[in-house]
Image 1: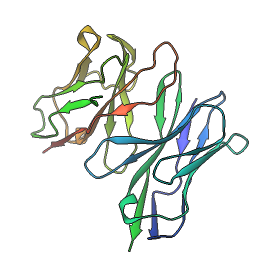
Image 2 (image 1 turned 120 degrees about the vertical axis):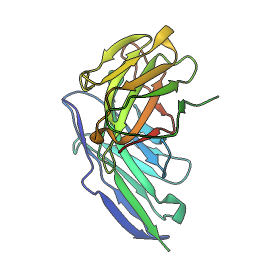
Image 3 (image 1 turned 180 degrees about the horizontal axis):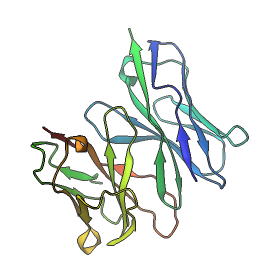
Image 4 (image 1 turned 45 degrees about the horizontal axis):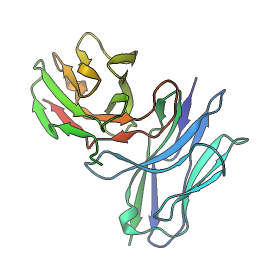
Length: 111
Length: 116
């Protein structure tokens, strides 16, 4: 069975500080991993994805995530956050076109 | 490229009433999903279609929820009768993948349902 765990329900951080949002997954087979972002009253938008190849993946707005198979993790990081990064972030895995989502982490960036 | 379209954006109904949501996926996407997102939780899959066939509806409360995807394109999700606990955001998503391919899912903006 597949599952995704996001241990931090909320992460407060000051603007320009670094942040890490944790994601761990459980699966007995190979999976593909995603991070989605959800702004208030919006649907989910793809932030970045790991399908194969390099274990470090980057988004266009400065986020990165590293696939770590031995630790079954796919943590999301950004070296310097902006107020506009305030949103909820969901980690997800897919196997045979089925998506499994974590419970989400609310990132609150303070000025 | 047009995204996933959903309507309505918001709906308020009384318990025991019925409601329907509509979704038009991205053109050419074989797979369509309906998710329920309760406040403070991650999306929970209700039903997954591949073309016009149901792949997974194991978490769909079939006594009150129904969904169809006619002609393998747009889809409707219906709740009849609604309960207070159905208050949630209903997200539609589509993906290109079929037959085991893994690609990202694209989401619509969702329909926020409030049952009073």
